[in-house]
Image 1: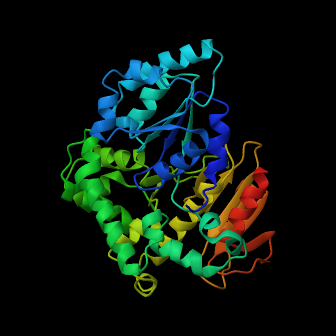
Image 2: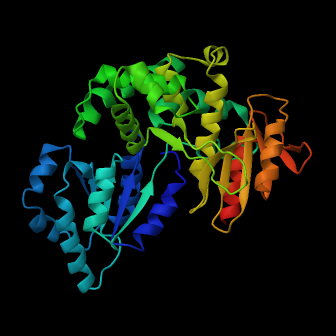
Image 3: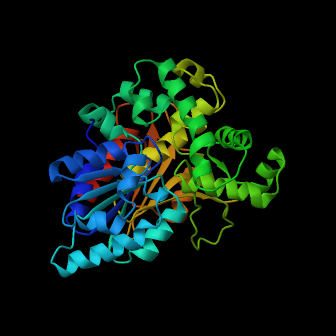
Length: 397
């Protein structure tokens, strides 16, 4: 197993609270991570997609009570929402017996329903963690911190889902992502109760890939898809709930200027962007019109995957042309801002400098696909995506 940065965080949370919910899209590595943690703790693992394991929970309270005090891992917990009240009672019983941590690890493909069910039923008893696909610090190790471009280009092209990134060839990786998309459309999404034609949602998902990094215009998507705006908005909500699409909110500040108020929209995993657009290798990617937007979305996701707790991501744009691709706001009020360029000799645009005059950030960066870091004036530094990810991790420690 490749070492995941979330591993020690998950261990720590289990030592602090009775239940941890580990969220993430399918095939992102939740089960592998959970089993690695469970092995150290002698955990009981139950897969709620298994008929045999589900049969054990026919009398869930009696069965789980026999294992009280042991870590129980419940995979695909969204398939059994009726378990949440049972878990609440067992957690309260264990607390009375002096055990108040590390009882349950719940794995689920993210959805608002799951969050609402666990939050309403287990208030004060549960903590949430999100497992992202592989990031630059996980796939490149020490080489990534030095800006090594080989692993970064591979991660950008294939995305961070483990089976895709680790595939023995680009064609095998692409085929895995295409199968993944088909599986989500035909099998996984209907499990959440949405009756949406698979072909309709595929077209919509592909539209989002073509629109990567654009400002969200629901009405335009609705017209292109031949549905009403409410339906198009529901499609976006669904893909966002499943952690497959990100709506990056605009930065709102009292700067006396007219600001863009709609979010930007990204397909979160760059490998899925490329699969939706039938881009199979780097040469095809570099000649495709989406290349710049794909690189921007990739960098945004890599940085948001490593930011410290409490950091919020936004973009900034005014009607006058001032623009920042990514604004990171820290809990202490500090701002870091980034312009993202797919160029080996990047220069900040005038709109970036103008936006910095509005926001007065603590640090300014231009993120590019090269390896070296160097200043370009106006307190701005050019950095690699891995180098900036490393700085963000350092700031958290």
